[in-house]
Amino acid sequence: MMTPGQLHRLRRLLCSLQDSTRDALVAARRRPARHFAKVAAVTSADTIYAIDRVSEAAITAWFDRHWPAAEWPVQVVMEGIEDDDTPLTFPRGTPVNRTLLKVILDPIDGTRGIMYDKRSAWALAGAAPQRGARTHTGDIFVAAMSELPTSKHAVADQFSAVRGSGLVAERIDLATGQRKRWRPRPSQARDFDHGFASFARFFPEGKAWLSTLEENLWKQLGVFGRNGGQLVFDDQYISTGGQLCELIVGHDRMVADIRPIAFERLGLSGALACHPYDICTALLLREAGGVIEDPLGRPLRAPLDTTTPVSWIAWANPHLARLVRPVLRRLLAQGGM
Image (cartoon, rainbow, N blue to C red):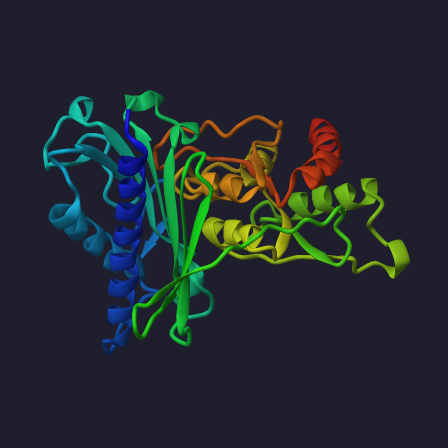
C-alpha cells in the first residue's frame, strides 16, 4: 500500500517520463532527413512507424536512468518492445513475480497524425499494482498523458491523476519549460445539439457498419434531420488519448470506439482496434468528472497487454451517459440496425 506522498511521486515520475518522450521527439524533428512515416515493423497489435522507434529508445533509456527500481521493481508493458517470453522489467531481468508495479505505456498514441505533422499525438501511461496476468485497466491507480505537439506548437498540455485525488492539468511552454496549472472542465451540456459527438471509424474496415449504427442512434434520440439537420458534429481524431483530451477540456460531449464489435459482426479478423495501452488513461476522464465504460455500461476491465481489443464509450457528464446508454444498448442488441 502506497502513501499519498508516494502516489503523487509516482504520478510525477510518469509525467517526467513523458517529458523525456516529448523532448526526444522534438529534438528528432530538428534533424534533417527524418522519415517518420516509414514503416519500421508490423506487429499483431499495430503498424510500427519510424517515429515510434524514437520514443521507444527514449523510454528505455529513461527507465534505466531515472526509475527507482530498487524501491519499486516494475514491469513495463509497451507495444514494440514488450515480449511475452522476455518481459521488460526494471531492474533489468527482474522476474515479473518479484515486481511491485505494472506500468503500461503508449509512447505515441496518434502516430499517424504526428508523423505527418498534422495533429498532436499523446504519450500515455498507467500504473497498477502487479497482479500478474490478472492485472487489468480497472486496477490502474495513477495515470498521465502528455501532448506530443506538432512543429508549430508553442505550448503542450499534460494531464495526470492519482485515483480519487482529482485531475492535475499543466500547460508547458516549449521554449522555456515553464509550467502553468489550469483547470479544464468537461462539457455540462444536457443534449448534443451543436456539439461534437463521434464514433471512431478511422479506416475503411467497418466504416459502413459503424456509420449505420451512429445514424440510427441519432434517429432514436430525435436528433437526425431535426431543424434541417447538421446538429451533431464529428471529429475523427486518430488518437484515444486525443479523444479523451477533447472530452476532458470540454470540446466533445461523447466519443465511442466500438470497432471490435463491428469487426466481430463483420467477420474481420486482425483489423486495427483500440488496445489496453490506448485506453490506459481512462482514469483521467473519470477524475475530471466524465464517464467511461464498456458498451454494456460496465467498468473497463481489459488485461494490461498489447493485443486485447477494447470497446469503450465515454461521455462528458453523467446526464449524457444516461441519455444515450439505453438506446445504444438496444441498437447493439438488434445488430446496430
